[in-house]
Amino acid sequence: MNIIELIQRDSKNEDFLSRLLSVLSERLGLQCSPLGSVRIELSILPPMLLLPVLLQVAALHCVLGVVVLTALPGLVLWYYYMTHRKKRRTLFFLSLALFSLAYMYYLFITEIVPRGDVSYQQVVTATTGMILMLISLVRTKQGPGYVQADNRHNNITSTNQSKLCNQDSACCNGVSQSDHAVENKRKWCSICRLVRPSRAGHCRICGVCVLRMDHHCVWINCCVGQDNHRHFLLTLLLFLLTSLYGISMVLRSVCPRQSVFTALLYCPGVYNQYSTALCFTCVWYSCIITGGLLHLLILQIINISCNVTEREVQLALRNGTGRRRFCGLLFSLGTILPHSALHVSLHHEWS
Image 1 (cartoon, rainbow, N blue to C red):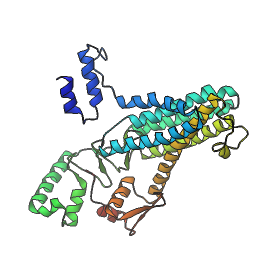
Image 2 (tube, rainbow, N blue to C red):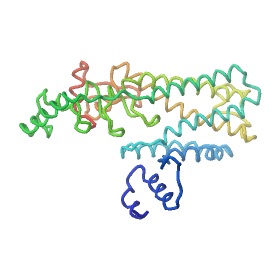
Image 3 (cartoon, rainbow, N blue to C red):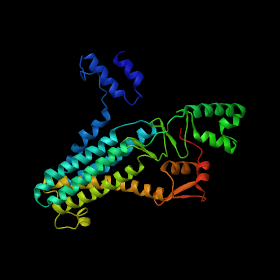
Image 4 (cartoon, helix red, strand yellow):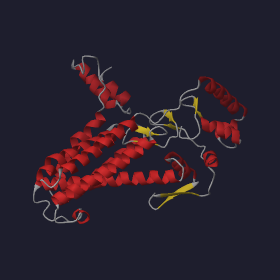
């Protein structure tokens, strides 16, 4: 297979660049590893290459800072909707989050600590918060809890599902179904070929069924479900606390004459020195990320208080049985329903 045929065949696949690189390496006689070929995930490279360059450009002048810090979130959101619409897995967002954390910590150690405005205890506190957050992230990445196949039960359900569709064609079309048919259709996953427990859902990005599925988080490249939901919330909380603590320390160092809240908007002379301008630009970048994750944490807390998952909220919004208010910070159902009735009303699955 030559390179042209590969482009025509795999131009729509998510690992197209990896396949192309593999073919080029093979044609050139290059070996990726003595143990065999190694798949290279190219989506992790753009954040590592572009983020330092963009932040350093933004630190040259306040106008460039406004342009870069306005365009950067827009590009990230555009890439998110492109990958989410095509249901592709990507390490881009996880790479962006981890490299942003590493780069901010590097600047904190090399630029802020030598100024002498930060005590040893503050450095230890910030470092401990970052380490705890990474440990919680690793625990989150261990898995959301997948639906395990029960061969005997699945075979029976599959047979019953086929008979039900053959006997009543309306069952397959979803025009008029009995409660039993709706319940069976809701529990049976035609892709994974297994029976899903209550509140489980199929993730079209991961291609598996997840126990008490909440959502697929692109920032960790993993689903959030029954087994890792608490660790996911703990990761968000630790990140927010560590980020806010680090932002306050940096602002006190580069703008010592201003209060923390005033320095973010008014810090005279911060662009007179490139190092302080770079730290100030990174503070604004951290504030943008912190604001986005704070919004996510608030939504999670609201969903928990309503005893619903994000997946159930999205299904309710799509079916017209619920709505968000105040920029998505509040979710309300049109009618207060028992929890079991809510599941019956949300029988349209994503699988």
